[in-house]
Image 1: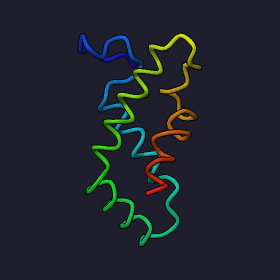
Image 2: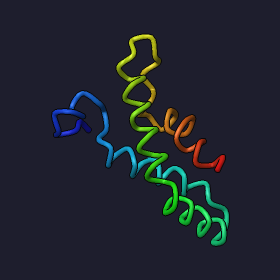
Image 3: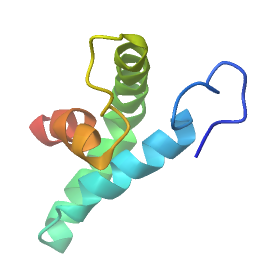
Image 4: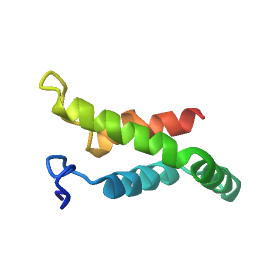
Amino acid sequence: MKSETNKESKYPMTYEEFEKRVIELFLASTDSPHDLEGKKYLLNEYGDDIIRGEYKMACYYYDDLKSPDNEFTDEGLLMQPVRILEMI
């Protein structure tokens, strides 16, 4: 799905779409209600800054012709922004 804004129109996802998918993937690996609470707290406290920074990096690498163009796939999201959130 392409973004409607001029600035993001060349990227496969808008920031909002990127954020939503990263959160879905991050929460999908939850094993228990306690773990879910912890992850939601982490997203509430740090998620926006981390996800926004990861979106900027994904856009940067998407523009780089030497980069493998998987930044906006589930595989790419799991390898970078979701992994970063898991490490916190």
